[in-house]
Length: 510
Image (cartoon, rainbow, N blue to C red; front, side, top):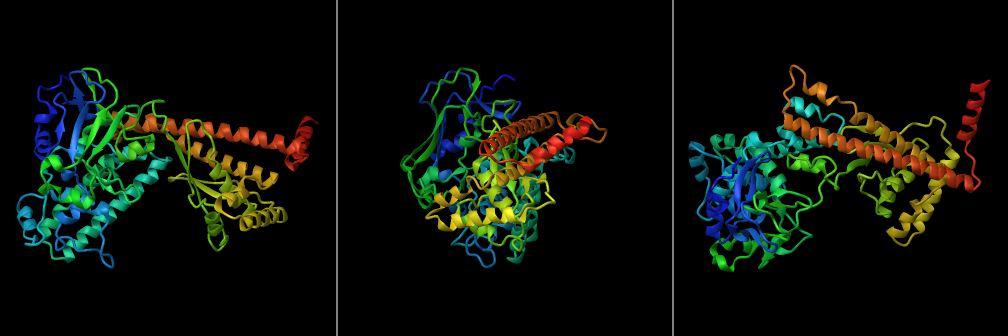
């Protein structure tokens, strides 16, 4: 499609930015393409060009929202005088959509000392509409079924459960506060889902305003969030005149020239008639699909990962385990495997400890629905495993800090090491089976299937990437196993399973 003559700067959103002291570069043009509305330039842009600037005075921050929503509209939650940032930000966007008689009812809940301030109508109007969104919560049931066996299946279910819980709690609090039912009804699940999706796909860290990375919260920068993602895009997020979030929330009363802002500056030449990109940082296809509704095709996403998460045994079985993991600084049970299949050292270390607690390899699962329990060894060597555990605990207790304590899990015993690699192999094999169990083409072409071609392609890219990583991880695990056996043999250690294999071979030839 040919780019329209209207520049982005002349759109209602562009005029909104300009009035606040922000701007779009005059060459930028909105254009409909396969990804929705994208930003193009009909002329070359040289390095150092600022393509968009959003003043902090119109940034949507939790601090600003708290000043904008009256307490009698959304009373504080029970036993808590601080509301959740995500809840407030989501509700603020939803309230911009209230119309008709409910809008008049909404205004009646404002008081003289705390009126309702909805200051972002041009921005909200420019945001993508629900029918253009392609995150998994906007998939049809047939499309969601194609995520079966992936981490995204569980992640989508968890996200829906969490956001619905927020929405139901907000509706309940508004009703108990006496907010008219017409207003409560306008805060619908469909609108809540849309607003929450806008935040998940467009929010920046508040540290871009105040520099406080340790206490960063989600922030929306109107206009800046129009640029699509390309991981290799060379841009700078440039902040001028940093200020506190309190100052930014009150900055509408300040002269525009005195207000700081966030700019996107291109650090490479952008050719004429090409799209202008931002980069969202290193994000896997799993994260991109869940939060943004797109994936990077083929091998063009070097940040792709396979997430694996260990499951601890019940506390009545291993009550000391959480404390030991804390002592070695390994409380995080979620691990990521990169495209090359390298097994994270922390994952192996945790499994050494788990195996030492029992001859039964530790139960483990992928980060989603595909749980993967390790193979069970019915013949438990209680004496050997107990010795391993005693050795580990003694080393950890004697350590002076978490780093030296963690060294106790670098190697435990040859038997422990092979048990760990056996359990890891079982976990990866089960994950591979789950990922390859869905015939995308067959399920997508069924008579009752409602699968859009672009969604099918995204799921195919995502699943293919996950399969490639788990296969690489299996190959890496096999190399580790062979190397471990070789080192053990060099150390003069013989394993019973080798003799058993030889006996089996002899009986086969008789």
